[in-house]
Image 1 (cartoon, rainbow, N blue to C red):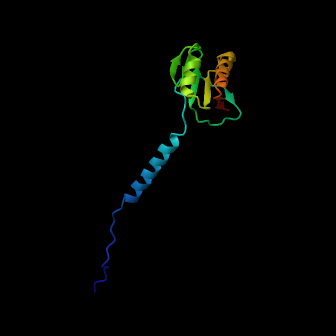
Image 2: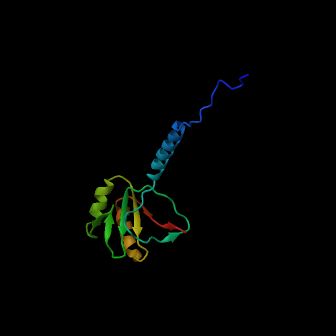
Image 3: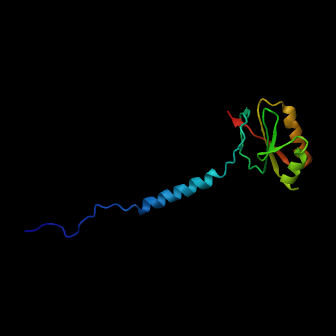
Length: 129
């Protein structure tokens, strides 16, 4: 008497659903990583209790050597206002200040004054504590 089953269970594992899951995770991480736009210049930012993420249109960086950069492009202090005007394009945008903590704040106030003159919102970049 033969009692063996006619339905054989296949020991193979289908990877199709696993690759779909990996693809969805890859897309998710690629999309969420583009929301953060860090400054590419090496400055030591001051720390603060509260820190908000601001979508930056124009980034002004002042290094401890008192070099000015607008969106990672080196600019002299005399040409800073003209560069900000061209980057803002007349629209009310925001200017994010990335100022090294060793730089005296008179330089930051100077840039903030230029941005206020151009009717732009000024945001200071900090590192949360």
